[in-house]
Length: 424
Ligand code: BJ8
Image (cartoon, rainbow, N blue to C red; front, side, top):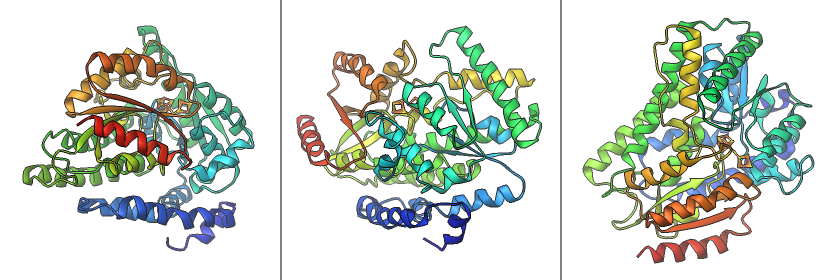
C-alpha cells in the first residue's frame, strides 16, 4: 500500500493496530485470489483497489470533503444512494466483513450478535477503518434488531440518521417508504446545504441505474450453461467494491469486465474445467473481506455462479423509473424499486423464495447453498421455508451457518465436498 500514514493519523486512527490489519490482508488476498488461474484481465483494477483499500478511495473522499462535499455511510441496500448522490454527497457502504474487528464490537454488543454488526462497531470504535472515520453522517435503517440496537450505540460516537423501514409490502408500506425517502432527502439537504431538484434526482437515478445495468451484464454472462467465464470469488469482489466506489467509475469498470466475459463466453474460455458443478449461494451478505465460503466452495470442485444476496443480485436487479415529472414521483419511483428487494426482515417474504427458484433456472445451477451468519435470527428462521421450496423444486440444497473465523473451515469443507460429490 502506498504511504497513507499521515492521512490515517489525521483521521485519528489507531495506526499501530491498523498496521496489523494491513499486514494480514495482502496474504489473505494473495492466497485466495492471486492463486486462481486464468482470471479475467480486467480484474486488475479490482486487485489494485484491494491493494490500496484503506488508502485510495478514502483519499478521494477526503479530497471531496476539502471541496465542501459530504460523505455518507450506509449499512443496507434499502438506503437509496440516488438521494445522497443528488445532494452532491458521496456514499460508502460500511458493513464490516472481517474477524479483525469482531472483538472490538464485542466490547459494546452481546457476543451472540451477528458478526457483521459486531465487526462494524469494532471498526468504528477501534478506529481501524478509515471509511468509518471519514463519514460525516451514518444512515441506519430499522431492519433487524441487532442493527437497530447497534445504531443507538454507534450514535453515541458519530452523527446518525435512521430510516424507518416498513416490514411488509402493501401499498401503504410503499407509500410510507416513499415518505421516508422524502424525509431523508430533506436531511441530506440540511447536511449538504444543497437543494435536491427533480432534474438532479433524475440524473442521480440514471447514474445508479447505469451501475446496476453494468453489474447485471456481469451476472448475465455468468448464466451461460456451457461456460464459467469468471469465478464466484471475482464476481463477489466486484460487488463488494461496488459498495464504496464512485458509481460512474463502478459502471465503467464493470462494463469492461462484462465485455471480457461476453467475449470469453463466445470463445469458450472458462475458469473451471467443463462439468464443474454450478452453485447458487443465497443468504446473508458477504461484506468485504469475507471471502471464506466462496473460497471453500471453489476449491472443493464447484463454482459459485450466482449470489442471491445483498452483495449480489439484490444490489442491482430492478431499475428505478427514470425521467420523473416531480420530486414526489421520483421518491415513489425509488420506493417502488427498493421495495422489490427481498430481505428476510419482511413478512411474508415469498419474493425471496420466488427469486431463488427463478435464479436457479436462469443460472442453470446444480445445487443451492443457503448461508447464514451466526446469530442472524431472520435468515436462520427463513431457511425452513427456503429449504422446503427448494426441495419441492427438486434442487439439491445445503444449509450452512458460519461466522468470520476460520475455526469451522475444515468442517465446512468436508460438508461442501460431500454436497458437491452428491451432485454427481
Ligand atoms: S437488506 S440482509 S443489507 S438488512 S446478517 S445485520 S439482517 S443479523 S445485513 Fe442486511 Fe439490509 Fe437485509 Fe440486506 Fe441483521 Fe442478519 Fe446480521 Fe444482516
